[in-house]
Every structure is written in C-alpha cells, then in structure tokens.
Image 1 (spheres, rainbow, N blue to C red):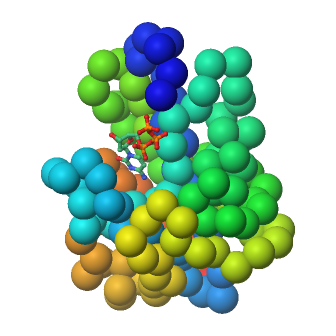
Image 2 (cartoon, rainbow, N blue to C red; image 1 turned 30 degrees about the horizontal axis):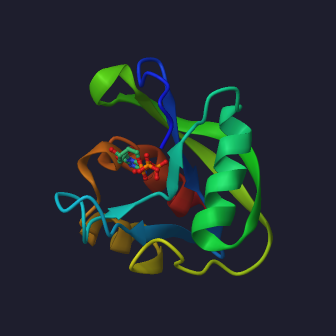
Length: 135
Ligand code: DCP
C-alpha cells in the first residue's frame, strides 16, 4: 500500500462486456464487503494514469490483458477524498481467472439486477443495463 495521501486519488474499475454479458467479481475483503460483487479494479498509484492502473489491476486480479476504453457512469465519491470511476475494458487476451476474488460471474441484464453489488457500484447500474440491453 502506498504512503501517498489518499486525497484526490482515484480508484478505477473495469466494465468488461463479452458475448452480451458483463463480468462481475466477488470481493474477499474487507469483511464489510466480502461476498459482495463489484467491477474489478483498484487504486491508481502515484504517477500512474487511470488507464495504466486499470490495465495493471485487471492483469493482477484476472490474469487478462485489456485495453482501457471510455468512462462509463458517474464519479462515485469515496472516503478520504478519493473518487471511484468506471471505464470500459476491452479484453485483448486471456480468459479471466479469479486470482484475488472468490469467484467471477458473467451476468446478463436480469442477473445484474439480482446480484448483491457493493453499494458504490450500484451507481453505474443504469449505464451497465443500457449497454447489456443493447448487446
Ligand atoms: N471499490 C468499490 N468498487 C469497485 C472497486 C473498488 O467500491 N468496483 C472500493 C473498495 C475500496 C476501494 O474502492 O474501498 C479500493 O478498492 P480495492 O481495495 O479493490 O483497491 P486496491 O486493491 O488497490 O487497494 P489496496 O491494495 O490498498 O488494498
């Protein structure tokens, strides 16, 4: 974990769409979030771009190579001045594996609505649903 102050730091999350489905990942930590589902991602390091951070995080967490695409959905304020932002992530190579999550699931629009998403990620449901309905 970095010692840099958290203020103004960004957390990035990737929306990977494939075959009409969206990839969700089930968190293992912290205890308050364990078992709940999210778009995979993590903190942007100091001197790192959000795009590079997303590529790095998805490589570390899912063992895939992605290309970072456009923003999707609203900025979600986190504690300590941090902000959470979702980006489209296009799979370039590899099949996602849960290296840091307890499991992964490809969901369609109906399944997305039934998943126990972390509260922050619920902010993106309208755009995610719109994309899934258009696929
Ligand atoms: N977060 C979220 N929704 C996501 C991804 C992250 O609400 N789709 C939140 C959970 C945490 C914060 O953002 O409060 C940071 O996420 P992670 O713990 O996944 O990030 P890192 O793994 O980079 O953090 P660290 O290595 O510092 O534990």
